Image (cartoon, rainbow, N blue to C red):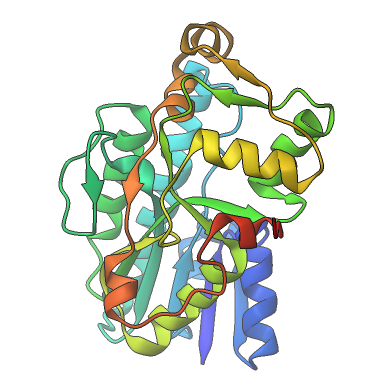
Length: 279
C-alpha cells in the first residue's frame, strides 16, 4: 500500500508516518512546496492508494485578523490542491482522509456523526469550509473530526505542563464545559482501522469517555503530583485571549458512534489511563 501524507512533519503526522512505516507501508510526505506545484502533487497522488490530509496552521497562536486568515487559508488551499489532483487523476478507488475538528459542533447537546447542530464561531466556520472543500472529491472520503489529542510531553499536554508544574494550573471558567479528547495512539490506530475497514463519511475520532474541563484539570494535576486549586473566570480569559477564549470555555459533548459501530477498540478509553494516572 502507498500512503501520501500532507502535514507529515506535524505532531500527529510524524507519529502516523512512523507507525505506517513500521507496518511496511510506503509513505510519501507531501511538502508545502509540492502542494503549490500541481505537477509534483499530481505525480505523488497518482501513485497513492490513500491520501491523508492533516495540514493546517496551528490554532494555538494569537488570533489576529491576519493569523485567522492563515488558519483558514492553510486548510482550504491545501485541501483544494489535493482534491483537484485526485479529481484530475479520475480514480474513484482512492481514499482521502481529511482532518477536521469537533469544534464544528455546538456546545448545547450530545453529538454523533449525524448531528448538524453546529457552533456559530470562527473555528466552526473553518471546519465547515474545510469539510466542504474535501467533499468536492470524486474518490472515497472520510472526514475525521478530531478531539484534543493527548500525548505524554507533546501537543496539548506539552503546552499546559509547565503551568501545572509550577502549581498554577487552573480550571477554565466554571469547568463544566465538556472536553472531547483522543489519545495519540488511538488516533493513529483509528486511522489505520478506517483504512482497513473502509469506514467512510464523517467520523468522530474521540475517546468514548466524556469528561469536563474541571475533571481533566484535576486529574492531570494529580498525574504530575500537583494540585489544581484555581479557576480563571470567563471574563479574564476573554480579556487575555480575545476571540480565542471561546475554545477554552465552550466544549463539545461528542461520541464516536461510527467507530463504536465498526467495533474499533480503544487502548485509552478513559482519561486516567491516557494520562498514566492510576489512582
